Image (cartoon, rainbow, N blue to C red; front, top):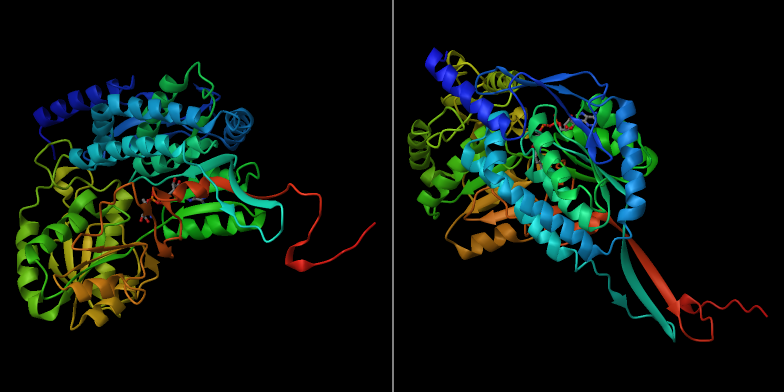
Length: 522
Ligand code: NAD
């Protein structure tokens, strides 16, 4: 438990961090905003948000009722009828200012992310930087929302493709990337001419309220004033209300594979579209010819970084037999040096898990792995004496036939397997339902190319001599199979936020039909 002195220092810190956004510890704040303003009369069931480092209540949050959610969608729908007419580069100018708003508040936001989510400050700064980066990318994209011209088979005809804004985008986001991942969606959707209704995780409401404040500061008095709404509330109430609302043509959903199934079913019923960013079960393969130092650093960041609470966290380590013993010795030695503690302290490498139920998932996951034949090599303890939700990172010797190895346990636990060959390693990598991220460590060019070939990794992200975590926003981000198939961020991910239209223009005086069909009418 914390001493009185540490507890009072922590309280001062918490007050400072919340104060930067006009919030006070233990006070009530509003988590519903639409039409350019927060709504203190929001009538959903209030929620508490807790400091994962102490377990203490940070604030009480007024949430949205389904009625509030409907009103937010109505506002966003009306705003869309105007926003879609604003020239895209002008929409880009608003997103540029939004990026500047985040840039100006980067440190304040990072400290709030670290406080409420529990990720270490360096990663929290990276998270805010990712929002800034995607805004920069989206500004350029706002001048590049181009279609293509296709050769027409008919004389005096032109065949073109163009892209139009889609409508209201419902963004349902997870606790573990409370800004960056929803940010990938906002920035692109806004330049594409869509408006936003955002339902963040109820585990990180203060971060989303702070982001909404920045949106209001930037958009107040502009043509963008009403384009961005916030509806904090439960998945089964507000999440479901968004899924069911036919005025929301696209849902961007980030969360577990179970969430993805629910979203897919609900949207299929009304032919809605989804961008799904779901759970991962990511592997790193280390071949015998690899640069082991490089591999070790990547594996430790992938397994322990963000306390194992990234969609891209390394959950499976596949070692080629000749180096397996040596690599494991280095891995255990590295784990022993990991400073676990207050995520706001610069020397900490691993903060707490996000909640008590995350601690239970860790504990239950480890017990089940051992029941199925796994052997615990390192860690496995809940650090209950510290208060908050701290655990040790754990290493488990597992076998690929253990059913639990096919599941994502969202905690800092890595399974270790040994293999003889690259072919066997690829088979193990591809043997799980999820298909998000993967990495191969080798100095052999042929092995690297085999890994990247169509017979290699089946994941949306396949790296060589780089770990599973830490993607740049320039590339399209997302995964295959149960990870949902969605793509966000760079490359051509913007197309997911628009509707495509194919246009045929006849500038002649005849009416030839395609495929040579004749239909003479006088
Ligand atoms: P979660 O699935 O518990 O919740 C995610 C969001 O879905 C929350 O906002 C929640 O309220 C909402 N939700 C829950 N039930 C719903 C329903 N029936 N209808 C509509 N919305 C509903 O996930 P989490 O614990 O917040 O986050 C961790 C998970 O997210 C992990 O599985 C992780 O891998 C995944 N994730 C994936 C990516 C990616 O890009 N692939 C990124 C971040 C997190």
